[in-house]
Length: 104
Image (tube, rainbow, N blue to C red; front, top):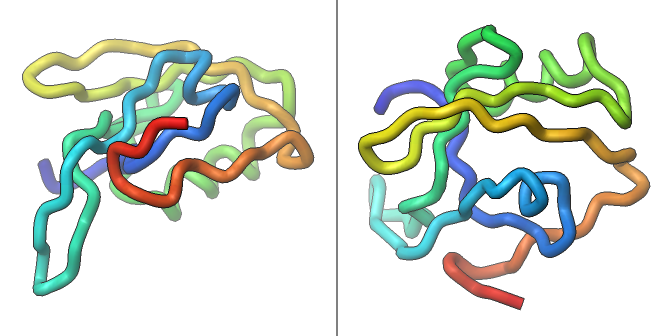
């Protein structure tokens, strides 16, 4: 996959967790750097395809506010499906786990 945003970790009690998104579960080496892999890949938001995190954040800043529900197109393994996700305020944000596959 050449486009999209990898979900490397999901914070407990976050909108991502409530929506059922899954973070990475193992480490791979890319260009001699460890990268968390195996998580969901977000490829579109509200029908608009995204190529990277910058495009996802840009869409969220311009088009949404806390309390809005967005529809994410997610790739997990060999399947793709839509996931509704209700946005929280950034004030309510919690940090995701610090290591790949870590559960709290």
